[in-house]
Image (cartoon, rainbow, N blue to C red):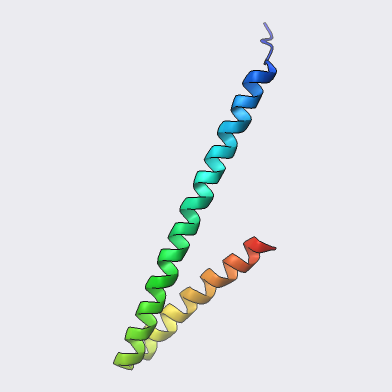
Length: 74
């Protein structure tokens, strides 16, 4: 038996999908902002402590995060 999907149901599914994607995007942006701030703090700490390994680690992480943002924008 083939059940017919009504346009209203399709619209609800579409709206729910958009809402889920919007929530996911907002969450990802918030996480990226948090990580960006945290990495900057860690980079500053590394400079004060003159810890090259820590500096390189967090600089690389920040660069990856920035590259992801640029890729998403394209």
